[in-house]
Length: 320
Image 1 (cartoon, one colour):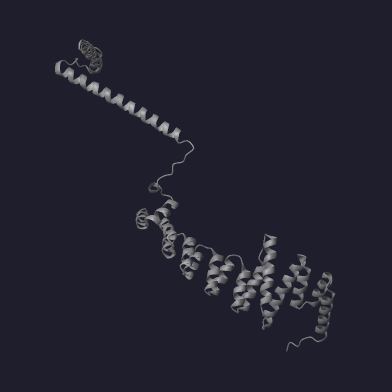
Image 2 (tube, helix red, strand yellow; image 1 turned 120 degrees about the vertical axis):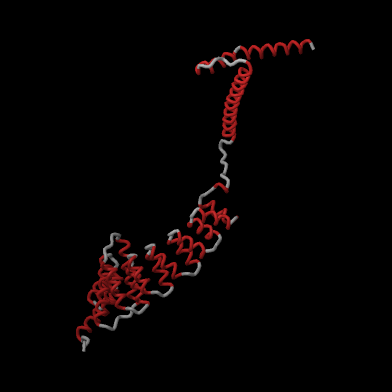
């Protein structure tokens, strides 16, 4: 009991010293710059109490900030090498919207509609395998090609082709128009895509010989920078010519033969001797065909072409 009494007496002494020593000097330092006298009595007690509380709050704030920084540092150090995924509710990327759309479709769509993210809504419907709805939202977002793909999946081929045309995807639009029998749009699309030989194929299938010949002539006369692509195109033109029946009209027949000879000359220039000889024979130029067959080592075919040329010269066809 004696020790407790002594300890309390010492504590009161320290409090008295702190109250009338450091705190008195702090109170003087605060009030003196404002020209105030040091408060006495009750005012002295209130001022010192307020200063002590302010000091406590400052120290507590500093302590909390230091403690938070230390805890954050400890967490970062303990999680080195580990990746914490962002909560799905906080993600706002396309993939997050798709996953959230599968789990909560209506809420996700309502949120995206408020945010006016039409393309994201289309992606959600695309994930839900609803191509018609997806196409409408992609179209609203002016994503023509994605809208077209979904309209095609929904069976709306004509609408898909129209959007691809709008997106200037000429070849894709042409193939869709071809699939629904709209030959004029299909041929025009292939022409715009730089594939007149495909446009010619469309017109051949439709029985429009003059249009087909126009496209084939365009294919052979347009400039090509890639020799391999040009060679492939000429081969394709020749395949289309072989599928065609010789025109009945004399003018169209002459154009037909001219295109055949043009292909033959290109084949000969590329070193495709046998193919060039066959093309010259099909065009009616038997002398050129005979020379190439002889060069290719096919003497039987060369002799046959010479006999045909001799018979034609002895018995020319009567134009009348």
